[in-house]
Amino acid sequence: MRILLLSHAFNNLAQRLFVELRERRHDVTVELDINDAVTREAVELAAPDLVIAPFLKRAIAETVWRSVPCFIVHPGIRGDRGPSSLDWAILDSEPTWGVTVLQAEAEMDAGPVWACCEFPMRDAAKSSIYRDEVTEVAVAAVLDAVDRFAEGGFMPQRVDPAAAGVRGRARPAMRQDDRAIDWSSDTTARVLAKIRSGDGNPGVRDRLFDRTVHLYNAKAAAGFEGPPGYVVARSGPAIARATIDGAVWIGHLREPAGEYPFKLPATHVLAREVAGLPVVPVDAPAGFGEIAYREVGDVGMLEFDFYNGAMGAEASRRLLAAYLMATTRPTKVIVLLGGTEFWSNGMDLNLIEAARSPADESWANINALDDLAEAIVRTQSHLTVAALSGNAGAGGVFLARTTDLVWLRNGVVLNPHYKDMGNLFGSELWTYLLARRAGVAAARNVTEARLPMGAAEAVALGLADDSIAGPTRSAFTRAVAARAEALAAEPDWSLRMAGKARLRAADEADKPLALYRAEELEHMRRNFYGFDPSYHVARSNFVREVAKSRTPVTIARHRDRRCLFPRRIAS
Ligand code: COA
Image 1 (cartoon, rainbow, N blue to C red):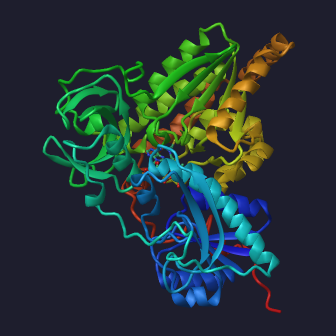
Image 2 (cartoon, rainbow, N blue to C red; image 1 turned 120 degrees about the vertical axis):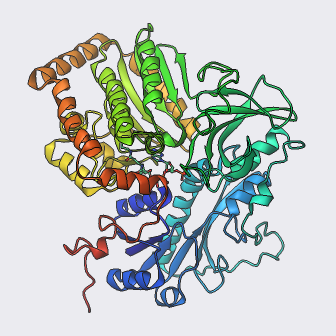
Image 3 (cartoon, rainbow, N blue to C red; image 1 turned 90 degrees about the horizontal axis):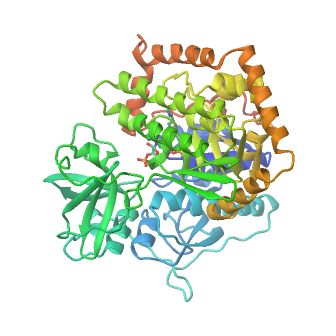
């Protein structure tokens, strides 16, 4: 079928549907929901059989839904309506939640239901549940709905929220007052539920040191006490704030009226205010905890959970130190597990944007990432594996490819390109890694196409070595540990390691790694310090979430003059 994805943003769910529907050989094109006239034009150009809306912030125009069936993906259970479904589900501690695919009609979220699916809820931020459970279930529901639509004969049913057995209901948009924290009476669990209900957006509004800030990236903090509401310690990016029965870590803040009105580490925003507080090392057992190392038999497992997968210079250096420590252990395999939501999204663009010299900070950041990339490529003591349960983008994808083996959870989406960030050239040794793994022509295609890629395509291209089915991320991690242990136990271990050493030596003789790095960094120097400001402009727009004024032609295939989206022939 010809399918037009109409979405407020090309977010992770839209990307995943783009990948899944194309894998099923549908012609898929994308239009961002900018205004009704542009949407109508897109429908005319694309002439779709079906419009699917994975993520909308407003209703579809009547002229559109009357001219073509439009499926809305609503992140709520059957009967649920309103723009804050997941926020309410988290705040109300719902034990299960769901996704409904319904057909657009005049009243929002009230059309007939084509498919729905439920999942058990987890104590986690809204964005985490959206990227994990909601996305998995939404993909299943959309694929069901598409099949039903294609086969014909299915009669979607309208749901009456007042009918017996219907748990969902219409809820209003959640306001800041609904999730405001009362530090004098809210327990740690309640504080966490409130913060998580608004994390990633809009964040819970609060007051800290007489400043209005929004709170993100929170978890329980053990071993602290103090008057409720007081900030009692700091650790890495986070501050610990006392509650009536303990304390919470708050990792990130946004100060809407501040000089940098986007998310930054709490200790960065409140640097002066928290300077004198007791410091707990970030990766100590009582600390905020971003990097953790454990061993399972002969396998060292290194987790690194940086907020939104952003790896600043300091975080990259810390990870390098942890990695080098892992290489000194008497194990055979090191697995780089990344974080639960993202494996890595490369340089921390928010920290760069807030730096006194964004160019200098970019330079420091890319060099720290390159040091890590080089250390992994040069490792001869261990077999290295990158295991991605979460998505990766830009430099994060190539950082994963520095390892000997890359294993992807089945539903992972990769964005192995830098150019969307103002024509950034990129580094992390990608010119070496991509050409060696995928070949020069494929490498050029991957970086030029700027499209999201699913696990199957990544494996076929050589960007990854295997994909592992796992219904949940914890099941994936268990499967990874078992596979890594089996690798370590292989009888021809020394042969494998000798092969690895031979390959590296041959590659080095062909062209030294240092030369690849120097060439990439020369391009990056021009991106950061050169005459063309594109990277700085694109980064500023990205961190400030400046809305797009048009859909990039890479995904709006119906707008591509080279006719990459097959035209409908009039019969
Ligand atoms: N630095 C800082 N924040 C980042 C980031 C980065 N490199 N990459 C992603 N984020 C943040 C986003 O701002 C967003 O923040 P929010 O919680 O306030 O909404 C969150 O992570 C999720 O990103 P989003 O863009 O909404 O996810 P997506 O699934 O739609 O897209 C990417 C994923 C990777 C394609 C997209 O985030 C991206 O292009 N990131 C930048 C990659 C990059 O250019 N890195 C620098 C070069 S190495």
